Length: 390
Ligand code: ATP
Ligand code: MG
Image (cartoon, rainbow, N blue to C red; front, top):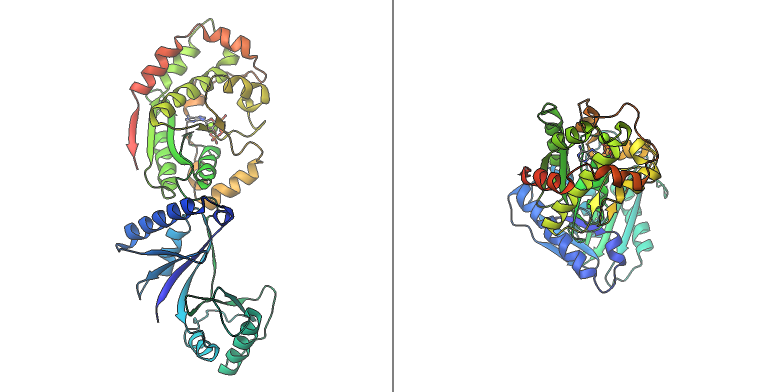
């Protein structure tokens, strides 16, 4: 009996004339991930609002789940067997392929969907298959809502494709369907999640990290590389710029004409400018940061105003309305939390003022900045970038 991976897409299905664009991107990326991870030449077909992929006979399902779970655009997926459209035959096939449960489920339900002409309705098929399975010897009561075992059947392409488990997909839009964005990523909890959320909406993320080396050790950079490695599983080509920022912080911190408390805002303005320069080089259309309104000193609305003032391209901040708890939950789900929570000296803490300004005035900030050769520093840091491909 043939085995398939069957996927349903989510929001892409709502697209009208440009649905094909999104479906093609999804097909291409899924094929790439499968080919690369399982050394094959997989064919991803699109038919009647679903994607199907014929699978080899023997597969390690968990490995496939790990890969498919990271493909954006997918609402859910399952591993199905190609059964008959004859309900009697189909019930026999389902029964013969029933998984060996470690713990027997307490109840079951049959769910059918059809996208082909058949002499019965889906609800009739559900009832009949349920009864036939009970005849076969499935000694379980039927439970219509929240059953422990759902036997799922989809009738299309002249077959009844059945499965016993459905997996949640990653949601969002197809990878690389929205062009490039440059993300500012630290070793903290928030920015990896922010990058993930923008990738989920179809952006291809180019990562930039500002480090304090040689004023700090290389731990932070190593941590960021690990984070970017995890996130790189969600897209095709991943680039990380490591930018030597300690020299800029030192220049600001040692400038006697710049008050200590305003430094944080100036650091961030410089980061934004440097990231913007990289965005222009990379033909990216905006920046991404992990800010959440009011979370720390640099994220008051006044300070954000003063920071955004340094950028002439859009700044996307998907966590702006998130509580920390919500961000942590997502970080745990993605797998970045375990790395982000490790303590390490980040480049910003080193030249940090004891009491940062909470309500920077943008005109003052611009005035203080005149004491710096902004252009020179932007050029220098970009010139000295180390670029890593993952
Ligand atoms: P995070 O957990 O992402 O570090 P945070 O709550 O610590 O965020 P800040 O340190 O104020 O907040 O940083 C705000 C945002 O600025 C970060 O989410 C990130 O996008 C960017 N950022 C901060 N430090 C760096 C850095 N060293 N390199 C690149 N981006 C940075
Ligand atoms: Mg931080």
